[in-house]
Length: 139
Image (cartoon, rainbow, N blue to C red; front, top):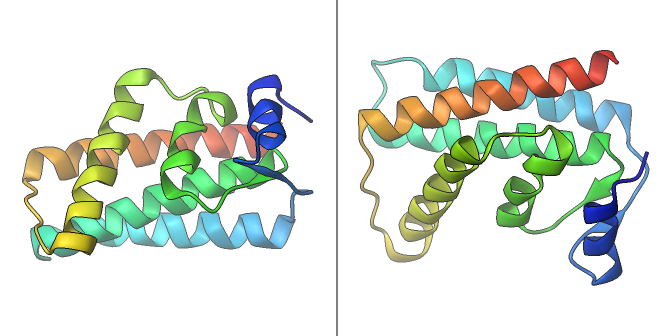
């Protein structure tokens, strides 16, 4: 199943077209769900919870992209494609965008400034991706 916007990204070299692989998708979903469950553990530090929630969201977003028959090496693009892979609303995409920027600051500059509000929003967005992905896998 192809998608015009995603096919355009293939055409310009931003995505690769690659048949979906059930075991890969199942592994990504399993990893994403486990990380989400761990990220909800309030006894963990905010930094750990953010890292777990962010990586869970990425695993689930990548699973959604792979389910549609595409692959990307860009974390940011995997998140951007959620509007086309699982019809994620723009408000939730913005949460993932903010989380991605904060993650990059932490990774490349050592500055991580996150609070409960961002983590809660990130968890909600990731759970929404999980739900929409699950619905897409069942149909």
